[in-house]
Image (cartoon, rainbow, N blue to C red; front, side):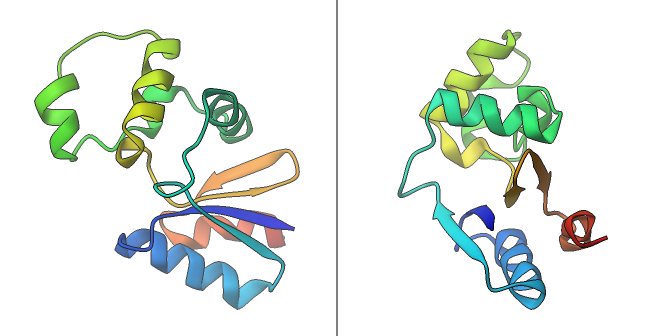
Length: 114
């Protein structure tokens, strides 16, 4: 079973979902802009990704540039910022078991199929 945290309006996210669908049918799609991610879920995703919160920030987003660029926040603060501004979360994130990958480029998803 795979879970993909997906934004259908994002070209990279659509490419990741399409790539995953070419590998398996066992997929749960979470549109995280419609079904918000909680702090606990985001922390779990970060642990499975083996990433720090700031590593998963989309720094090209207007909200980042306007409100957060150049400011120092600790990990817990970044998690809260991402929960409150989910557009800032890099996508897609694909999860299976205790492992997760950021599916950009989509071939990163291959780690699950080796």
